[in-house]
Amino acid sequence: PLKAIIFDLDGVITDTAEYHFLAWGALAKELNIPFSKEFNEQLKGISRMESLEKILVHGGKSTDYTEVQKRHLANMKNEHYKKLIDSLTPNDILPGMKKFILEVKNTGIKLAIASASKNAVSVITSLGLKDQFDVIVDAKTIKNGKPDPEVFLTAANLLKVEPKHCIGIEDAAAGVEAIKRAGMFAIGIGSLNTLEKADRVYETTKDVTLKEITKLYAN
Ligand code: B16
Ligand code: MG
Image (cartoon, rainbow, N blue to C red):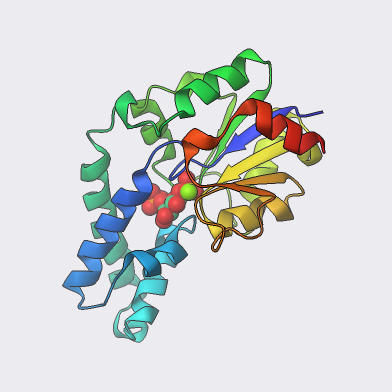
């Protein structure tokens, strides 16, 4: 039986993925590195420092900066990002997600967050959803980022639920891979092209219903 649903945060519960895109885009522009929505897909779900490295490699500039300078660049992006998420409110919850979360909660299924973001607790608090979750696991508590399964396995462990009794929901390719490697059922939000490893892909959050995913999980 389905006992828990583990949610990614950025791109599933709220569209902070768009703010990450804007903040990285501004930094890339300053560094004279080409940046596009398509390239940004590769940054979804992966850590801040890994994202920076991918951007620098993409621009052929990885060896131009020392580790200290790279930390500084990552901090600049994060300060910009924090300004962008400063004004988040419950109105920024993605369509259908609040209703879905409350429905899951009412059914007695456990809920957790598994996010690669160090800003996860602040985001979920601004959205007014923190109390709905039994467990929040973020980049501050884990060693290996997505696509490593650690963040999802840690969430299941803290919930005291076996991975096979969990569904994971993700918008990033790295995240879907992490869910599958954790031995869970994977729901993807986005395009089939990028999320082909998911057990089921929905185009948007408003297409996700508890009734349907419970059925898919059971079969
Ligand atoms: P931060 P998620 C991830 O969050 C984002 O998808 C990814 O784009 C970002 O680089 C990462 O968090 C780190 O975020 O800089 O705030 O620590 O989708 O796993 O909830
Ligand atoms: Mg995400």
